Image (cartoon, rainbow, N blue to C red):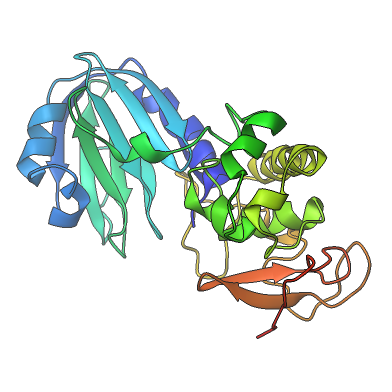
Length: 284
């Protein structure tokens, strides 16, 4: 958390402040925020006086093309969020990155748990983007491509959706929602999700992400995700299974169950999502 919808909404908010504007000052205020570069000073130097050509996104990463050919990559981690501020605004606790622009606006990164980062890479350096599969929203694979990526995989499909290799951008919340909508049990071996089943999963992915984006993303009770303007996302009430253990499935009324998949809490409906042959499901 945040996942693809929350990062996409953040991107849309920030693009108006960043696209085509030049960085006039950069301050990295925590070493961990700059951990993918040599030091905070290196991030500051690489960004100094650079113009942002375009703010994009791949999976859960924000990706900004700079005018010198470098790329700025940012990840929100577990609790990070960006804000658009004026220079005189109070700098909030846990603000670890401040970027000033030529129109006197500032973009600030607030990250209490410091799992997020801001980094700058040139074309000779390997970035975290290199291991990502196709984006689940803006450039999804075809059913055939996804089937090929999953072919022979024995790991549970839930774990493979979280891996970011077969398809990028999904986390715990939306993987559960997508599998429920596509009626695929989370422990189904990835190699069994092929053909029509892969097509159904991709259609469910599109529907679930579209709803989440339209609702402003999912803000849980911990308020780990807020929009750049400080508002909470409103998608929580639209979730069918995630966080709804023992509550009735909205499709059939069967109580939602919870299991661990590769140490991740996973919610599903045992009636809508039948356990695959040969797989034993043990509830928590």
